[in-house]
Image (cartoon, rainbow, N blue to C red; front, side, top):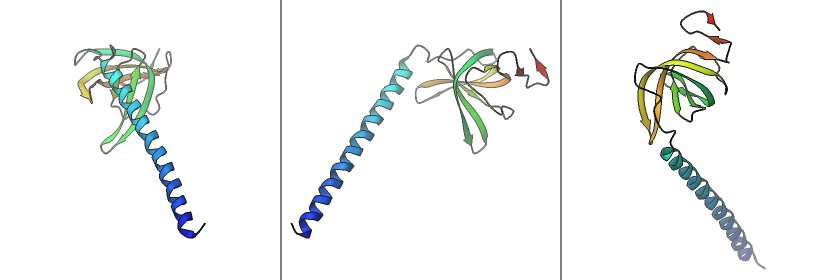
Amino acid sequence: MDIDDVKNLVSLVSYWNSNIRYQQRQAARQERERQHQAEVESEANTWAGQVGDTVRFTVRECTEVYGQYGNFWNATGTDGRRYVLNSRKIEELKPGDQITGVIKALNEFRGIKQTKIRVTEYGPIGDRPNLSGGWFN
């Protein structure tokens, strides 16, 4: 076995590994697209009300997003709806927290309806800070 055979063998193994990684990435991408399409077509893909309505929901999952003009939270309620919370006063948000706020806008991002909320109260049930001032129960 000479050096050219070794180089060819190394190239073949490298190609084989890169092809496997490519197929894994493609399968993951197709799965994400399938999940996204299922979410777009789900019954929970609705807005929480009309602009100006007061809404209250419990957080199922949430993510803080750092933007150029300030931070905001993306949250999914236990009802399956998507919410965007624009409040600089929210320091930490966890699943199980209850949010009360006023609907600011109704948006759609990649087919998923999102309700933008101006938060007035948030936190664990029974221990929520009132963002308009003070604490309440």
